[in-house]
Length: 224
Ligand code: 5RP
Image 1: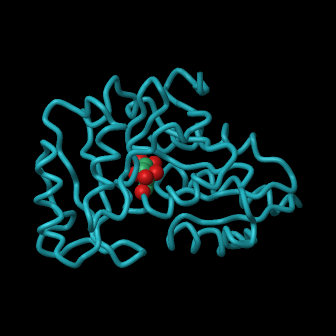
Image 2: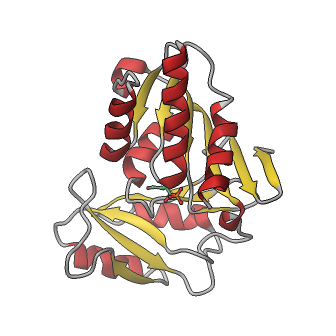
């Protein structure tokens, strides 16, 4: 599986040019992309990178990739990140790695968002293979989860009795939709109306390209 993830990541790294400002994703596939970007820096590319998690920041530092904040870089040329599900419109579920908030902030400030996945992540309808992660503030999070359940899902606090805490000090709830997510746009807007919800793992109309690797090779899906 690692070979397949690396294939997807390497294809995306080919899109990085000297002088670019680059967003660094999070997760086991993005890990290989950061490795590739580190190699470009060693070859002499002048890149400036913004990481989407403390883990990616640590990896980038070890590889000597120059880091900056979004305030310093302005809009990024490219971000390479993973995803948990991808549908035919290139809409995504992200965040099972726990970094969805920073990932979405960075994606929003990126010209070309490139997603790297293996073909097991492709779905017809979002929410059919994985739950939707939602980052919520800790205060009254049980109450926030109750309002999320009113939208027709079952919620599960990530980590249970020992909750997972994000890089931003928040909790994550996983939302299980028995029959998938019919209308991700409607769901995104309704979730964002609930006080306590910080951000959701629905990345809608954000991906420019999705690099899909499988045993048969690599292909690139482009925004229609
Ligand atoms: C982290 C993410 C990851 O990109 C997503 O979970 C995919 O990870 P992996 O490449 O390890 O399957 O959204 O918050």
